[in-house]
Length: 141
Image 1 (cartoon, helix red, strand yellow):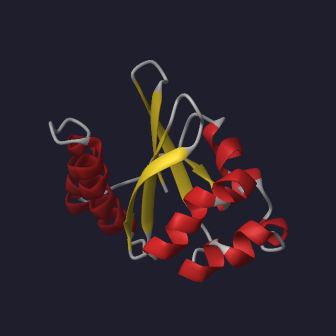
Image 2 (cartoon, rainbow, N blue to C red):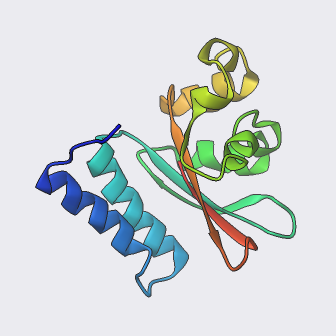
């Protein structure tokens, strides 16, 4: 199925892609790409992490319209009880949360009720970008 984009939408897509060719550090690249994605998708929230290739932990958060305190709780606790992100990463493409877990099942989890819901995150998409032969993985949520 082909999706027709307006010139304005196409320009927004190009803007997001261009951010990954920038010479800025990964935090600034993800911040700029995140703002572009929010605009393109008319989304309300954005978060991104880098996966530490040695520990598998998600670090170096970048976020827009979310609570820094809540995201700190993700790093300290919820990422180790996250029932969806690892499954989404295995798809190796942009994937909707509901492709890996039924919404009814998700809303019954501690992860949803005590973490996602606090920032108003009811539906989402994750995309993972591999760098350096899979040693560094950035995600866009």
